[in-house]
Length: 264
Image 1 (cartoon, rainbow, N blue to C red):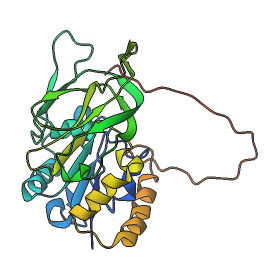
Image 2 (cartoon, rainbow, N blue to C red):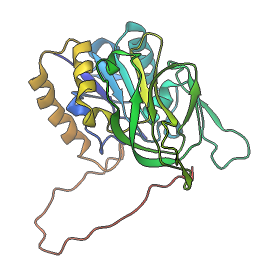
Image 3 (cartoon, rainbow, N blue to C red):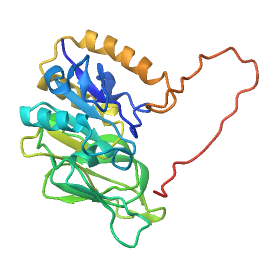
Image 4 (cartoon, one colour):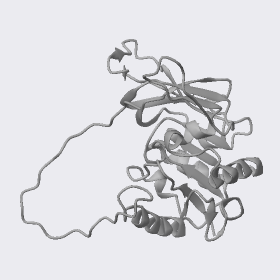
C-alpha cells in the first residue's frame, strides 16, 4: 500500500491546495503515522506552506523523521514554508533593522530573506530531479509569501515570472526573475515557492507516483478523500475548534474580501 504523508503541524495551511490529491496519511509534530515513525511508514512526504518557521521548533520530532527520509532517498516536497524548512536558514526580520535568522534543516543549499509576492505565475523548468522529468513546458501556479528571496548553490528546478513584488516593483521585461525551486544533490528533496504546483501540472504528479512505484492509484485517491475530510474538521491546526456542519440557510449569500497580513 502506497503511503504519501502530509505534514499537519502548527502553522501549516494545507486547506487551499489539494497537492495532486496525493496525500494518504496525516503526519503531526510527533512524526508518527499510525503509531509508527514516519520514516518507517511513508513512501513520500509533502510539507505545505504557512508559517512553519515562525510557528515551530526546529527540533520537533517530525523534523528528525524528515532527515531520516531524506537520507533514505524518499521523495520529500516542501512548498513555500515547507521549502524554507528544508533550507539552510531563513531571515524573518522583514521590519527589523538587523536580520532575524532561523535555521532550517539544511537539506537544500539555499537561504531565504524577505521578498513579498502574491501573483499568478508561470515558471521555467530545469531537469535536475525526477519531479521535472518530461516537463518540457513552463509550469503554472501562484506565489504568496513574505520571505521569498532565494539564494544559494542548490540545483535549480524553477524560475518564476513574477510581475509584482514588495507591493510595487514590476517586471516590465517579463523575465523569469525569481529563483523559485531547487533540490538537493540527489534530487529527492525538493523545494518550491509555487503553490498549486501539483494541482495544475499533471506531469509532476505522474513523475512522483512513478518515482515511488505506485500502482494503487485509485486507492491513493480514495484515501486522500479521508485526509481532506480530516483537514476540514477544525478551524486551524491543533485548535480543537470544530467546523460546524452546514445548515440550510435561506438568507442571501454575501462575499467578504480580505487580505493576508505580512507584518511578521
